[in-house]
Each structure stands twice: as structure tokens, then as C-alpha cells.
Length: 364
Image (cartoon, rainbow, N blue to C red):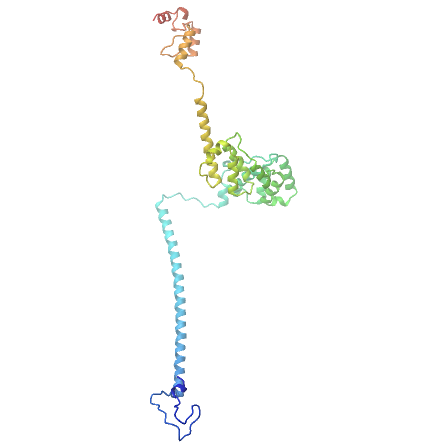
């Protein structure tokens, strides 16, 4: 509260506000209800400053204690995580021990290095790669077969040059002549199997490239072959094509024959190419079975076996006697002819033309 509001000048007659009245004319102010602040003692000011400094020191100590508690909690949290990890590891080890002791004891084998174990695999389990001469123009099967030997028998090919030498030993024709020249000249191509395979592909692999494979794939049709054969060629070309899954799926569907497409269009087609190929193969097999059944249904009817035998007996009265509606076999006929027996009853002393049993059957 300002002093001007606490002490208000009193306006009386003869005295102007704002002017200092004379002493003898100044009225006695009524100050019984006014608060006049007193000046602070310097000693009290020093005590107040000291108290404030102490409070600041206590606040600083509290902050330091709080920071220490926070660091301690973080350390406890890290220790807790570490203990959980150790507990998990101990649990796994206990489970392994339980499994080991509960399983039957296996004979202890001597430790063998991975290279020695791989080298111990007999090579007879893998067939040797077919010799590649470069005439076929498709190097991919040869590279895959060599890669199988390198992967399954790493101990047999410890260096890059040993792998290159193995590949060269299974080449023939123009490819062998080229590789032999590179090996004899100690070319850098023979220092790495990947570099050697890449150079071999550039020279002798004449498979269609990306654009050529795409054009061949777009022009591919099923024709009169089965869906399986069509899918094999489609997959072979798509391996060298950069089309996405949706494009390959639509192109395969468009290349199918009309009957197979008619069976697939009303259905909810799968989104991936493999499932679409499997569904198309199933529809093609179903159509093939239906066509086979239709041919059998429209086949001309043949006379019954009993009717055939009766017609044959009527046209050839000298045929052998049929016992139990079954004619004699070719071997039995030949035996009766060579033994001089009757072809009708199989007895001696007469022929089929004068067989008494035959006459009795006619009379009956």
C-alpha cells in the first residue's frame, strides 16, 4: 500500500490541495487507522540472508542426494536385468543337463575338425558333374553341380585354385581348350572360383538375357502339351526375367489353353504364382480324366463273350468242346493235334468230325 493512500491530505476551507499549508494552519492528521511501516533492523536482514543461504545449501544437498538415489536405482535396474539374463542361462543349462542325463548314453566319439568331417563324406554320394563343352549354351546346371560338391565337401577343396581345377577337369571341347589355356598362362581368372565362373558364363552361356527372356516369356503358350511341361519352361524363363510376381502370374494365366482358363476364371485365384501353377495342374489333370471317360463312353459296344462263343460254335461246328463255357487254350489244341486226340472231347480213337459226344450234344 503506497504512502499516498495511507496518508491522505484533508481538504478544508481556506487550504488548497497540493500546496503545503502553514504550520499554524496544518490540521492534526487522524492516524489511528493508518499503518505506517517501520524500517528493518540491519541485524535482522543479516539473519534473513543467512537463513536463505542455509535453505539453498539444504536444497543443493537434497538435489545431490536425489541424483545419487537416481543413479543407485539405475544401477539396481541394470543388476536386475543382468541377474535375469544369468537366471535364463542357468535355466537353459539345467534343461540341457536334464535332457542329456535322461537320454540314453551315446558312445563317446573322438573329436574331429569340421574340415576333416567334411572330407570324410564319401564322394560317391554326389554324382560327378556332367562335362560341359559349351555347345549347349546353358551353363547353369554345370555350375550348380560343382557348387554342390564345394558346399558338401569343403575339406576336399581347401583353396580357390583347387575348386577351379575341379571345374576344369569336368570341361570338354571348346570350353576345356579355353580353360586349359587360362590355367597354363597362370591367369588371374584361376585365382578365384567366382571370377572363373563369371568369365566362363560370359563366353559359353548363351541363355537369353533379361530382355530376351521377357520377350520369350510373353510369347510362351501352353499349346498341346500339359500344364506341367508348360510350367517348367515358364519357370526356366522367369528365372532370368526381372518381372514382379503379379506380372508373372498374369502372363502364366494368359498362356494357358482355353479349357484350362475357362475352369480357372470363375474361381478365386491365388495371389502367388506357385499356388496358381498348382491349381492349373489340378484343373488340367481333371480335364484329362474327363476326356478319357468321354472316349470310353462313346466307344462302340462289343458283343458279350457268351454271344461270341455261340456265334463261333455255330459258324465252326468242328471247334473243340467247351466245358463250363470255356474253350480250350491254344496250348491244349496243339497238344491234342500232336498226340492224335479228338479236338472235341480229347479222347483217342476218333476225330472231332465223328466224335460221339458231339453227336449226343446235337441230339440233345
